[in-house]
Image (tube, rainbow, N blue to C red):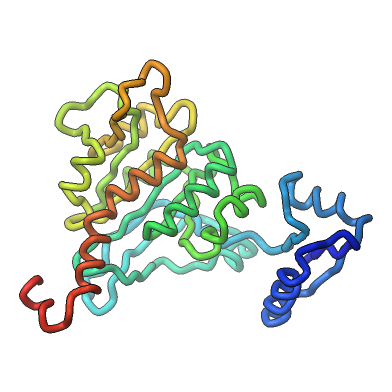
Amino acid sequence: MYIYNGEDRQNLSQDANLENLARQKEIKIIKVGRDGIRMMDKMSGGRPHNGCVLEASPLPQLPLKALGPLSEDPTKPGYSVELTYQSNEEAEINGTSDFFSYQLPRERKPFVLLLDGILDPGNLGAILRSTAFLGVNAVAISKHSSATLTPVALKASAGASEVITLFSVNSTIDFLTRSRETGWMVYAAVPSTSRSRGNSHLTVDRIETYDPLATRPTILVVGSEGEGLNKQVRREADFEVSIPSASGLLSVVDSLNVSVATGILCSAFLKKQQAGVEIENSVPTEEKESLW
């Protein structure tokens, strides 16, 4: 960990707390004077670092071919995954586990977000922050068409990238096809102005009412900031989902920032499940049986 300690440094108490945490984790601390500011700027990609830069190995991001079936053992809830090739060095970082357990409320099935073509690392980080906060089980990122987990993305995630399960995907189409074959439902995020697929097009209001996570494990696919999802990806979806505008200003503002839209969509999928948890946790024990 590099910490700026020039004579104009003001965050001394914060620095002391960081140093204590670093020592507890046996992290080496290097104090940097004014002559080291350029080095720290370069390490952070020119983005604000507030005088602190941590040099670390890449985050675990397991490469997948597909999501597999859910566990049939009620005492061990989780889902299997189909791994793709990784080198020994990559395996040391990512691990080789092909089963992911979870603790979910009642009958809620797992919910995975797939990002296909998110180009702005700031948007990527903001999405990771929202998904971790809302309770998404994992985020898969298309390897060849999306931003990577750069320092900019990691800072924008505000620590969420360290705690949420991350996957990487080589082929979005192949991943969706294989995952659907093992029982996963696929929802494609599309603009509200996009041409509807009839009964297979849903709004966030319908998602909240329909509550997909009560019945099937679910993948939500979100596309790039400018173009969205291509037609091939949309054809792999069981449903398309959009956020209708309530302002009547579509001629002026016809879309949301992708990180904002993703947060709204994820919240819609998880809203009813979250409400159930709040009710269960707030009801006295003797009243729970009558409710459930």
